[in-house]
Amino acid sequence: MGVDLDYNQYTGFAQIPYKIMEYLMVSNSTIWKLLKYPQSNALQQADLTMAEKRALVYGGQPITTENNPYRLYTVRFIDDAMTEEVTHLHIYMNRVVPQNAQVGSIDICFDCFCHNKIAVLSHPNYKPNRYDVMFEELMKTLNGKDVDTLGRLYFNGDGLSRVGNARLMSFSSDHKYQGYGIVMSVNVA
Image 1 (cartoon, one colour):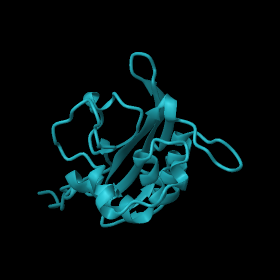
Image 2: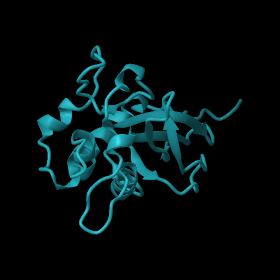
Image 3: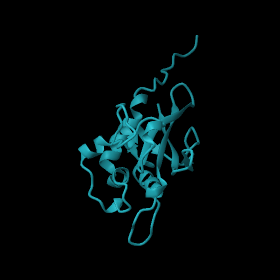
């Protein structure tokens, strides 16, 4: 007779994007400015209140193509949301890699992109791309950090899944949107 193992139940799996979103709400004001303000001086705008941040989060409501207020999604792609000159951040799970019965790794995707017409930000010393700043802010805020009860997020490819990467992407039929698809991972037991 074999040994009775406690198998990983991946409890809390469905909450991962929401826990990361909540962590970003209290840990980084720049990301929220980039999401809310399409102007080139977005970084110089006032910090958002918690209510303003929550109003940017898509929660399954019907979306109209005009004046869509949502900028952060916990799903991969919302086609109807892609008609305005705005910035988006999508946080979702991409892959689960079990190492054994008790330990696995979850790959989490962060797709941050913006319309090309609002890509360049104003800065006193240089003109950075909005999605480059978003990448930097996500790394600064999440890489190597313990997020709530999830565990330590990593972007180094040394974990179980060995996936950590970022790729530049452009899409829509006429390539109006550009940004990064970032994969970070967390080990779970």
